[in-house]
Image (cartoon, rainbow, N blue to C red; front, side, top):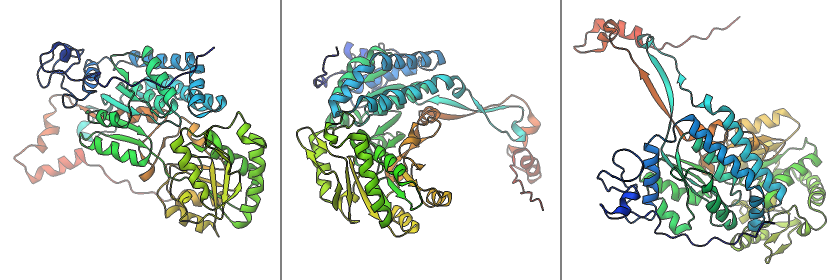
Length: 521
């Protein structure tokens, strides 16, 4: 029997705090304030990553010392940590299911699929291919370097920060972590405080599986996270809202730290008149109401003709009943809104347009029924913000061009969906719009492939990950040219004093020529 998880207690803010120079505590934390540290892990001087007094500076410095020691670089070390992460997922499977159920009533089927199976898929893909990904990538050379070695070396960044969200609190924390470990980094993880039972589970159990010198979990609210971001990290990976993404990017800019921002805006779903309506309804309903709509890649609204709207309403009503029964509130397969604040925000969106299906709510259990809205106006609140709840507005358009114009008039989304049996329609939407991802005749499923990059563009995000893209995100592609000594005849033409007669030889040995296209008549 698994004991219910309780809300986590407050974290002592003094942990890892810099101590005065010369004190034993300061040395233990790896804080030298500019002088050589006799304590700590790494060799040489270790500098505080933020001003003394920051509650997380000592922790960051401790991890930086471990990274500078080279401990995380060998393939064997990375594989061992990844395998330990796999044991965490296996041994804590039921705890993860219980914690997500407590936080937001997430059905165990959905939790296993998204929080465990998809994590394991990324993990196994990485374990299967890491030795290949780590190899130097040799590149083409010009004539003057033909006898030399030119390649791209995959360097770890150093100490990275991963800030996870609450809607998929295991997946969206651990999948980036897999890439960071694979690339040879040390990592500070900050799970969301909103999914408090998962936060507690991760904070109390994950460090038992990973090397504590190189990986740490920090529990923090908004104020503490602001202090955490004051420290110098070598890379920051954030998943959350665009407004918080701007705050993270501003903090990163102070240290010129590169970032990946996984955000989200409203994902359109165009349904053409040439499609199987029942099939569309089931796949759209599944994508919209999965996890009670609290999914960043869920279809946020439907665009279709007035005739298709009438057909789709009938099919959606049938699909919702098939999935969740006549009363979805009693279904074990339908989740709840994560918190009271989020419930009130989503509930207020029901005032947009007219409720055609659903609309029932229960504040005590944070239940909002699977809902479809019609007669929605383009300036209604439900069309202005990401819904992040089980509400599906339908907006009517007169043509495919009208739908494309509507999509392009708004911020680039994280995903665009199109349903049509006509390849020409699908290709038109693909070619004439921009988005982080694209999926035809289904929803969400594109992000289950580790072979595809997952990420946004513009307002919906910056950067991407999954599979080897995660490894690439947390690796610096370091250009390397290893030249041999001598070869005076090849090198002399570039040295002063310059002479015009040397230019032909210099051009011949370094020039890249444009290859003329060959057209067969």
